[in-house]
Image 1 (cartoon, rainbow, N blue to C red):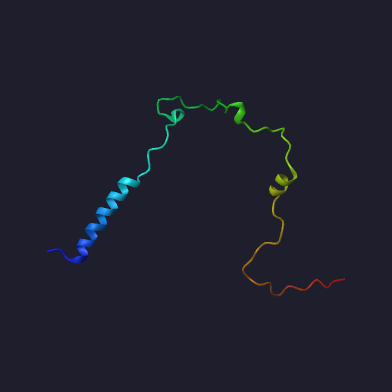
Image 2 (tube, one colour):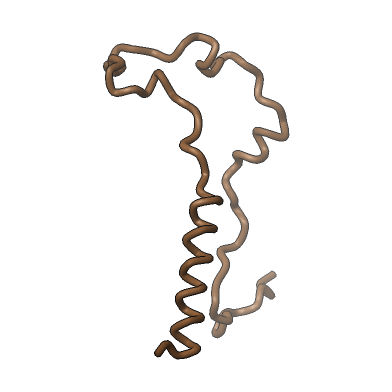
Length: 89
């Protein structure tokens, strides 16, 4: 005779199995350029010109600022102790 817990586990497993069958994502779209029978690019192959970066393109001020290294104080977890105040004239 089944216990109430075993029946609940069986029903839960059945619901999980049905939901997994219904909600399984599809295989997606085909990528013919990545197929195993396609030739692989060699060391001398380059990307199409439309996908290469333009080395002569102007860089905006905002982009240049976003690439600037951080030069602020280093964050620390300890308090500065034993440091003399800047009172030297």
